[in-house]
Image 1 (cartoon, rainbow, N blue to C red):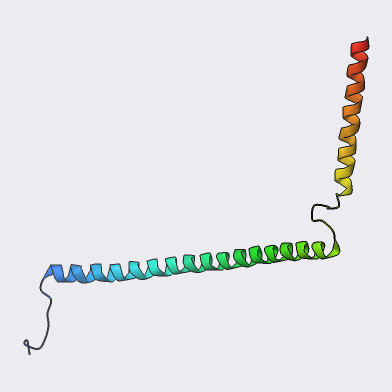
Image 2 (image 1 turned 60 degrees about the vertical axis):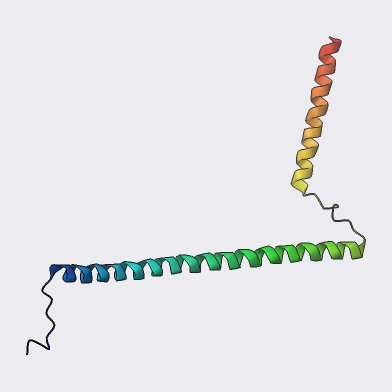
Length: 106
């Protein structure tokens, strides 16, 4: 009966078995963590690259259509807000220039 039964008498064998189980658990945990991070990176790269390509395609398409229509891509309509701001800046410069001329003449 004792010949067929395997009995672990050494403490080292039990400790090695415990360490192997712990290493196995840690390895599986690490692989799961890194696979999740890898998946997130792949999805981010996919979304960013498709967005980049879509923007570049639209930009090239707009330039091509502008050339066909005879418009230059540099001629862009300036927003009304920016026009108003530039007009105010120009008026302020004129007022400052007039004030300086009056101070010099005085």
